[in-house]
Length: 261
Image (cartoon, one colour):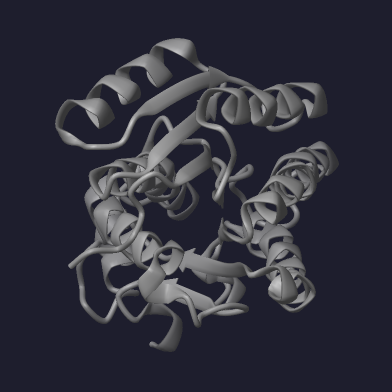
């Protein structure tokens, strides 16, 4: 199946590992060029090598911090300089501090707002003008299934990601005349470093073994298995492709049925 992504340019936040990496890999497999950024040069270099090894699209990596507006400006400028524009924006970041409401700190909340909320706002504001110049684009926000079904110990993540869902719905309407489609994907328990941290937190908070904590998480999923990052990469590839050209303003969970259980 052809997705029409040959020659398209994607900017992917947090593209060096986890869901961001899986998305970068999937898009370059279909011929898109990708610019990935995160805070660690070594991790980025390793990711770029793996992405480039078997795929058609080019990859460029940039060290930048979502908390730094100046660095985000440079990321966008460099991406446009190298690839000529931006067609796709993937808003993705590592999750905020884990813990129940009374255990997380005020600083934990402020850090999350700066990264998970303001990072998305800043990137959208920087990228949208370039999409308009190209005659359209795609914005995908990666949030969490917790916006549909609360998750114990993930109060900050569940709360702050609601903001992004609301923003996406408004942008979908506002940007539709410019042929810019905006959608949100909500991952559930997908096997990444983040899920491993959540399992460890469950083990500590409940005083149970890691094996029992893992089983606890599996029991929340009707399919009774953890997702693969590839599941997210494949869905996002469809949404940003020509095949997904009539889908905007949607919030789609990728969670093995967790939200409806």
